[in-house]
Image 1 (cartoon, rainbow, N blue to C red):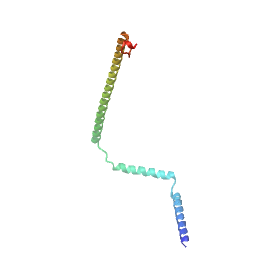
Image 2: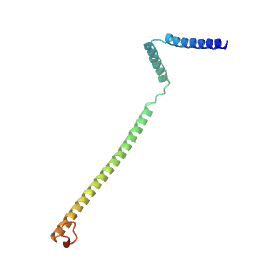
Image 3: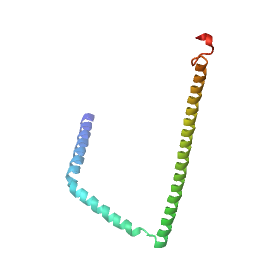
Image 4: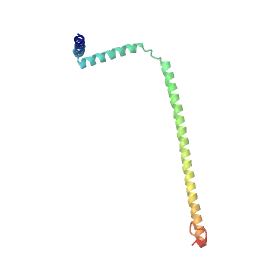
Length: 130
């Protein structure tokens, strides 16, 4: 008897699942109909939301615009100053590096000529090493 009850319960569950799936497919309208309803509801809700908005008056709009323009100008000046400082700093470093390289090359050349004049080549300390 327990087997009959369990099999009947299983049949009821299977039947309920079939009904659920068949109801979903039967009750669902065409995709275009559903999309049309969704778009219609969207615009209807948007219209209602637009009515709830409190729009600023001209004075508030002008005040907000001025504040925005001033903030943009301040940020623009700060960016300009940082850019100018970095540009000058990098060119200064390049100038120092070029001067140092030129000075090092000149010193090496001068030292080499002086040692060659004495009969020494670069890297040698004494004439006996020749």
